[in-house]
Image (cartoon, rainbow, N blue to C red; front, side):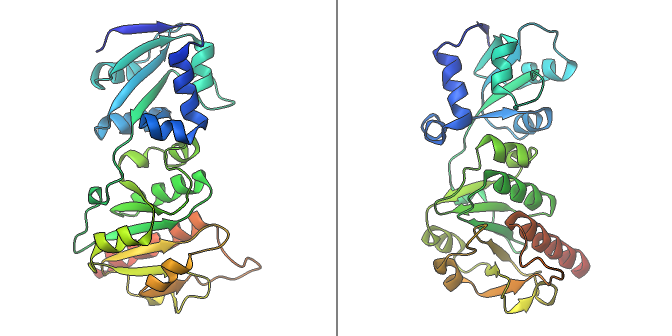
Amino acid sequence: MAAVQRIGSRNARFQQWQALLTNRAKRQRAREFVVQGVRAISLAVEHGWQIRALLYDADRPLSRWAEGVLRTARAGEVVAMAPELLAELGEKGEATPELVAVVGMPDDDLGRISVKDDFLGVLFDRPSQPGNVGSVIRSADAFGANGLVVTGHAADPYDPKSVRASTGSLFALPAVRVPSPREVTEWLGGRALLVGTDEHGETDLFDFDLTRPVLLLVGNETTGLSNAWRERCDHTVRIPMTGAASSLNAANAATAVLYETRRQRIAAR
């Protein structure tokens, strides 16, 4: 374990970490982000993410879990922090966390997502809400996807709201940001069908064969898929609905399509 430092005031180092919570540009420049919560921190360590710093409450005894993380995580820095400062880095409205991690970002490299014969990927086009990004990551992980691609001018997967909504799945499932469709089509090279979700899709979801290698395309929460992605879809599917609702929340729609894909693949075995 690295030598323990102590921070009891809002010094420059604390202010750098605090800025990671709200300033996307600073997260990107530093290539690091704040992680809160037992499950998320545990999964970040378990999956070998770079732990830049571990910050713990200087005024209370550590639990067995926290001691284990400090012992095994190989953090670059270990900091005993005044509880009121640590609380500012924790979730709003919650008690002071026992431990907060600062984690390094991996590269936005599509090569992190493996494309094999049973490939299942999700592409989220220009999502505006970080909570939805995290929710889609969670569902993609739960239903066996290989990774998530976030395209265009989009919410940040490393925003604290996204990290929390993923409940740790961010560290188990590759999530890669790309600026445009060109990078995705070059990466896939025709190895998977591009299947868009749309309320006016050509086929009901459960009538479409999702056992083949597929990249599922989910559009922006308000405007749906961009024209650039619509033109690239090999097929579009719709989720049959009843009631007064005209559409589903983007994360809910992604979850429904992922579940049906998983169901079909289990049945095909």
